[in-house]
Amino acid sequence: MDDTITTILKRRSIRKFTDLPVELEKITRLLEAAMAAPTAMNGQPWEFVVITERKVMDKFRSTLMFAKMNAPAAICVLGSSRRQKNKTGDKFWVQDCSAATENILLAATALGLGSVWVGIHPVTLFKRQVSEILNLPEGVTPLNLIYIGYPAEEKEPRTQYDDNRIQWGPFPASQQAKSNGLKPGDGLIFSKGDHDDH
Ligand SMILES: Cc1cc2nc3c(=O)[nH]c(=O)nc-3n(C[C@H](O)[C@H](O)[C@H](O)COP(=O)(O)O)c2cc1C
Image 1 (cartoon, helix red, strand yellow):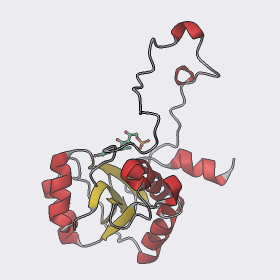
Image 2 (cartoon, rainbow, N blue to C red):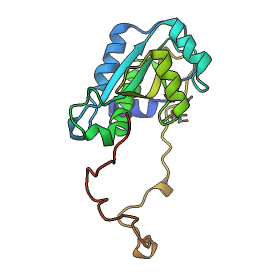
Image 3 (spheres, rainbow, N blue to C red):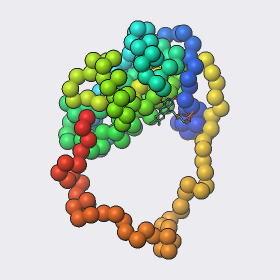
C-alpha cells in the first residue's frame, strides 16, 4: 500500500507518553508539514506556539479539563488575523488551521511520535485558559493543543469506513429537502459581517 495511506491509517490518538523529550529537529519537521497544508486563497491564517517547558505543560494539565495527558511537548495552532495574507482567513481560518493540524498529526505518526488533538476553539472557557497560560497577543485564537511525545501505548491502525455514510451520485429526487435554506445574498462569497472573531 502507498506509504501515505499507511500513515493515515496508523494515525491514532495517543494519550500515554514516555518521558523522552521530542527532538527540536522533529518538531521543526512537524511545523514544516503544518505549513505545507492548503489554505483558502493561500491566506495562511495561522501561527504556531511550541511548548516544551515542563512548567507550562503542567499548567495545561492542571487547568484544562481535557488536557491531562503526560505529553512532554505541545503545539498550539493559532488562527491568526494579524499574520494572514488576505481577508479570506476571516471566513476559513478553522478549516485552514485544521488542515495544518491534520498534517502535524500525520507527520508525527510518520516520525514515530504519538499525538492527540485537544480541542480548544470554539469553547470560550478553554480559549481564555489557553490565552492566559500562553500570554497570547491580540489577533490570534487558539484552535487546539496538539500533544506530542513518544508513545507509551499501541493502537491498531484502522479506518472507520462505513457504507452508510456514502451516497454515490445525487440523492433520489424524492429525498430532496423542501428548501435549501438559502436567503438572498447568501451566495456571496464575502458578505458583510460574515466572519469569525479571531
Ligand atoms: C476537533 C477535535 C477535538 C478533539 N478534542 C480532544 C480532546 O480534547 N481530548 C482528547 O483526548 N481527544 C480529543 N480529540 C481526539 C478524538 O477523541 C479522536 O480523534 C477520536 O476519538 C477518534 O480516535 P482516533 O484519533 O484514535 O482515530 C479531538 C479530535 C478532534 C478532531
